[in-house]
Length: 212
Length: 275
Image (tube, rainbow over all chains, first blue to last red; front, top):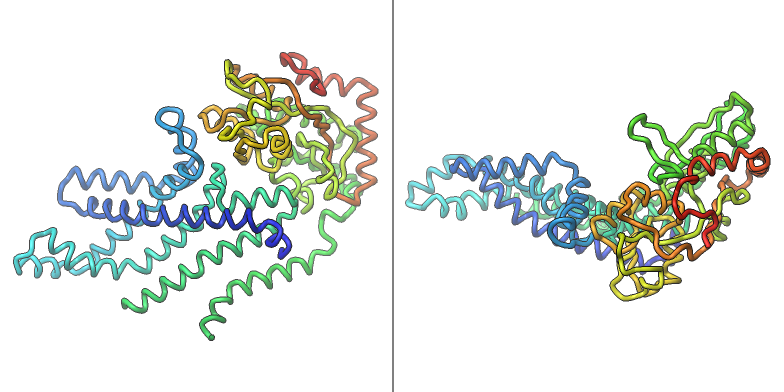
């Protein structure tokens, strides 16, 4: 296993960077999109609420691979060219955002309704109360489940391998196909994924302790 | 320090798993004598393609894999085990075929597999049973006429992971980008959606795609020689001798030619061995 790591380090390293890049982009994107849709879901506006629910239910219940293949194969036929990395990252962002929306919504709803009533009675508007009182408390509640989503996101980025996105899994496939040493290659790849996800896992645990 | 040790625990766990796995399984499935096992069970397990028209393709109507490789596998099984010998077919892809053979899931591979020196280091090959050559598939009316037209920066060529055609392209069109997809069906879909300008692999496989969708044509003829071999595990010499004898016998009786004609008889422009 060590000799595969040494000999194919440039390929595996570039794969690791692609995985990291895709994960970071998707993490930021899905956090923004997810929060947006969470607010849509709890909106008192009937149509806004409806759109939010449809988005979450559709993308939460379609396999990630299907979403990604859709962006890779169908979009270039009608709209614009997208390469594997972009298609994979877009798929990953949309898929994860649906889960994050559900997590954040649950967090907001977990904050006691008395908080909102109290805030409103001091003269704050609904938006002010939401942003300054409810949301900070909700974030604290959502940290542990969000951490799970982020770790899942890094691992799910292996979907890029199926659309030639040059990520860690793709490079692992290439190395396995060149060396014919499948078991050692995938163990090396697994180890490299651990290097990415373990710090994230420990950081989330640390945050949980700090904020609790 | 204690925290650091805890951090390394999962990695240490993975390492010990490696050691355990490499320590046991000395007498794995792939090292037992295939011929004896197969004679007892009256079955030979073949690794075949299911995404390659003409060679091995899943027929959606009846859920069965059909093609040249499949008919060859069935015929060779009958030659070795007699009339009541059964051929069990396991689907493989270019990327999974060698691992599946090496861990003993299949007894032999007959899966559009070119005999190459690199592969011969890990598996044993039979005599070539089919002579293909690598070519490119492009959209009808494309300005690309042969592989050398693809040697420019920014050219996207599609290939399949685990196939040696990708390495060949690096020789003939070193400036081009190569995108490797996981199977031929996916690579062809990617070509249709414009993810690349050409798809490269052996001409036999490409003609199959051209039959499926006549908007795509094989351009420029074959630029390499790709002799297909049946692969078995190292140390299975008795089985390999039987396979070679079976193919030889089939060529003598004309059964081989009958199977070739069945699959390639009315494919236009096809010529075994390329040019």
